[in-house]
Length: 212
Image 1 (cartoon, rainbow, N blue to C red):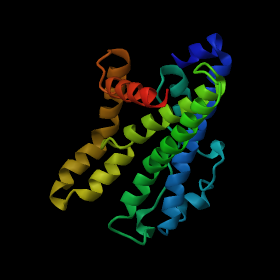
Image 2 (cartoon, rainbow, N blue to C red; image 1 turned 180 degrees about the vertical axis):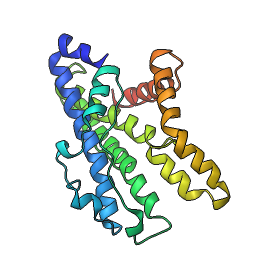
Image 3 (cartoon, rainbow, N blue to C red; image 1 turned 60 degrees about the vertical axis):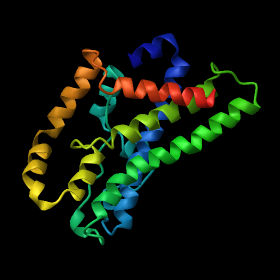
C-alpha cells in the first residue's frame, strides 16, 4: 500500500506524491490545451488551462490513489460542438493527455539515464528515485488511459473511429464501461488476477533494465 511509504520512508513518499501530482496535472492540462486549440474554451473558462495542481486533482480520486494504489484526476470539461475539426477534434483532445505522458517518459527517461550515468548517485538516491517515479507513473497514465473503456481517453478515440452501425455497441459501452473498468481494477488489485499488473510489471522491469 502506498500509505506504508509514509511511515517507512517518508521522503520517498513525498517524492512519489510530487511525481504523481505533477504527472496528473500535466496530463489534464494537455487535454485543456488541446481543447482550447481546437476552438473549445470550456476548460479555459473554468480555470483548467493551468498547471496548478489544485485545478486538476480530484479529492476522491486522490484519496483512492493513496488508499488502494489507483485513482484519477479531475476530468477536463469539453464541448465537442465547439471543435473546429468536427471529425477528429475529440480524438485530438483525448489523445493529448496520453501523448503528454509519453513525452514526459522520453524527457525524464533521458534525464534519469544521463544523471545515473554521469553522476555518483545510486538507485537509492532520492533524486534518482523521484525521476524514476515520474517515468513509471507516466507509463501507467499513458498506457492505462488508452484502454478503450469509458471514461478513459481510449474510449473517445474508439468511439470516433467506429462507424455509425456500431452506435448500439457504443451506447452500451458508454453506459456500462465505468462499472466494467472498476470491476477490472478491483479484480486486479484484490484478487491478484494480474490483468493490468502483469503488463505494467513487465514494462517496469524492461524500463529499469534500459535505465540502470
